[in-house]
Length: 361
Image (tube, rainbow, N blue to C red; front, top):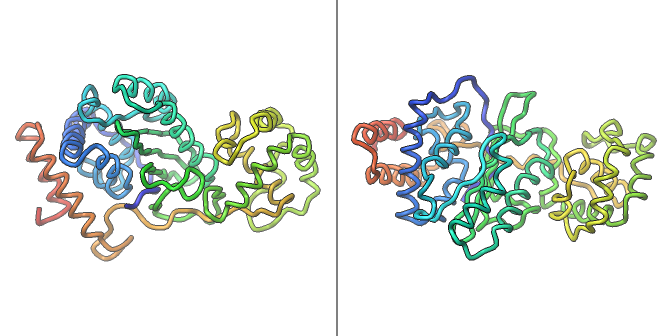
């Protein structure tokens, strides 16, 4: 199982309406057949794999790195199963931009309609934390603008969310899969796919950042006064040169309210700290700096991206083709399409598209 991050170059253009309508039909059928044949948890697991997700987007009609593959594929899936969520036991909330902010209410509504046996608020918290981690605890230069939260009746969940780097015009996609996630704040991505690594990224969810996470939480518990005193004198401190935090990054008086809220909440751990209202990237950077200066707890500056996305290339670039994964992807999709309720014309067109990926299909 490989889940994590994919870096994608952004291009102009969008899926025309006639294509999106077909994507909705095909995505719905693929979801229905996988959930029916292998169970909704398998569908969740596949969507949480950045390589499989990329192939899924290609089958729906995208090139391997077309702009919009993440948002459109997720939108087609959500629309494709609309009204059939209870039958499939698979539910999709969230979306792009404003739709992402509706995720909590959509989770509650879907869970209530499905009469699940668990507390929907646990899923709402998971949605919030996954977004907080990839936007605040992992500061790699990508601002989140798309968040889709999928879950099953058993309570298993997965996330597909995407951020944009305005400076490079690249998007990075983050995948989560709860059944195999060891912790929200300690290596939550079991595998991370990326086209390239950033030279410096504040990675507070790395295993190497454990001491820093503990120190940051301890600093907050001590109250805003000693913390503010440290920040107020930051300009006169000899800051370490091994990372990009500087005194200019800090505004000691700019987040007093956030510090006070964090102190009053007395977070029991780093997860709770991330959920404090107003705890954004800049506030966390300041806390990390103080924790390092006071307690000597250094965070990780390693970008967690470790391998490239998609199925690979015939020449081994960006990596050798993963044949078992490729075969499983094609076999599953082909079986789903063959057994789907699509009309003959759409079915044949979809199979021809698969054949372009794998000549022997």
